[in-house]
Amino acid sequence: MNMSIRVLIALAAVLWMGAGQAEDLRIIGEDKVFVANSGSGEEVEITRQMTPCAKNKGWLQPLVPEPGIVPVTEIEVLNAMNDEDFILVDMRTQEWFLDATIPGAVNIPYTEVAMRMDELGCSKGDDGWDCGNAMKVLGFCNGPVCPQSPTAMRAMIRDGFPAEKIYYYRGGMLDWDALGLTTVEGDL
Picture 1: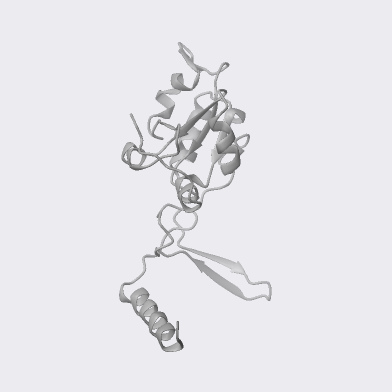
Picture 2: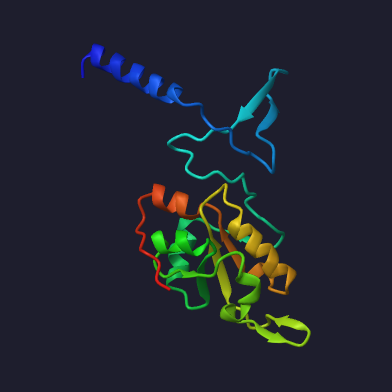
């Protein structure tokens, strides 16, 4: 590619990016700006904007949403798919699940998981949930900025599910898809 074509492509990209005002997204909680020390004593403002690469709005989620939860990578997700002690749970809302999910995942939306813990090996008694025979749950949602699965996991723990039986794939569908791993349409 000759130099003039490269310059035109670069100029077009700059104009395209400046054509619309980028939306400022939350970084942590409600904050849209994070101030960090640059190391030389100067402060640097870290911002996050919706770009072609920033596909999800949300806000950054911790690697371990609650003490005891086990963070996992794609390798552990792949191994869990063939482990009968695990259930792979897509904790996103149904429309996301139906569009595309990780093969073998079941959909228990984050708003319903605390009511459906019987599907995870718990039994409902007069005093609440008994999760002594609970399965290992590998949960995920849309990725590092999606609060759906961390919210579900907190509700599970609140209602008696053992944190050490919860495995969190923080990368979620964003990382799974970015890595080119197989997805399937969800089936209810």
